Length: 393
Length: 95
Image (tube, rainbow over all chains, first blue to last red; front, top):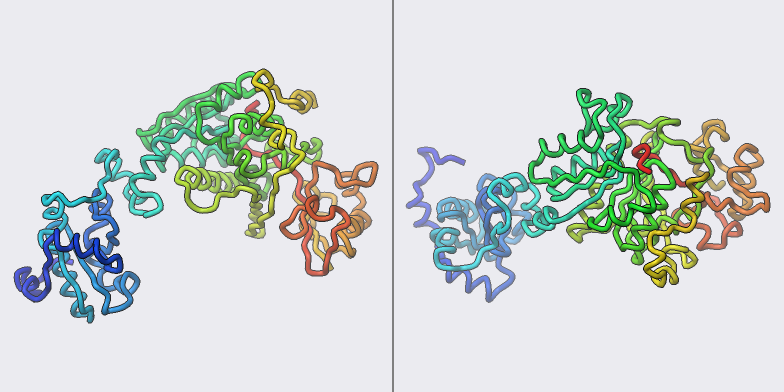
């Protein structure tokens, strides 16, 4: 809010309110954890550096948000801003609202840091990154630390198709630092109804390259690794070994079982989704912590029970819905927040707009993640018992 | 009467119905009532021995009947049975 001629000058405001020296504020905060410390600056300033424990309440929201931050007008409040002006005006406003014990830090966070008092800084993020990811770093669950984790994470996407396209775009936007893409296909006109990472002018281009172009134009921070290959038992362990999380959006059962077997061996979490027509499924498989894909589906269905999107069709939007649920799972795993879909299968029916959650349990008889699985010797690694059988079928 | 949720791949066999009400005291009876009403579903749900096909998961509400009492699991009128085959749709030809 800009001061107008009818508003008191800053000097007049400061005469009305109580100012507290930074060191005194620090001591008081250290002695009493019940005190509410309020940062009355703008979100981007808060994101760059703030005092530990401070709640952000931008100046324009002070009157409207104070109820949530401090419902009791007897609550002890300490306010700060950059140099002490905005917090002084906010303190006057709060006193006018009936708050009885409000102080404004003299000289703001500038004086605070000059006196060598600690702040939480966005160390490790460049100025551009602080700006780009400011809406993330504002979230206490993410913060600068979480953003740095994301930038240091390597995620492998199986397929730059329906599911992979939205997942890749949002993970790239979110700042997942390394995104690998396995796909040996080229962009086809029939893909564009749902594979939003590609474009009309890139029809005929390898999908990995098309995806790279789009990702790099969205976020130059991202290192894109193209794997223009088909996954098989000989190459899968090498390909997934370098990644932290695998996102499965494959459209066929051999790949899903192959990935499951390899990821369990290498203990890589897999966020798995599938779509068909108006329906989708998603779950997160965390080896040995929750069930694996084979615990859920011990054997693949016969072809008549498993049509592909190419044969049966799929609503394009389904790829977006399920692909973004996958991206959401990935980010939760990276940050270690929330409840991932471990041991849970989420079904989405778009026509009824209905979500259904089913429990998935570890199968004690599972040939891959059952009690005997970790005993498999090194020489057997990469040999997947019935994979050849699926392929032959 | 218990409701059975029919997956998309089985809907051609139920005349397009996504939900079918079927009578029965346990999961097996309810599914048999479904296959009586819609005979084309039988070969996709049951094997020659009369057991559930291994590639079809059946849930009573949110719990896999395999961890309950299988086809003998008791069913009440307000229960929902979910038939769930694996799906693989996504990106084409990765492997």
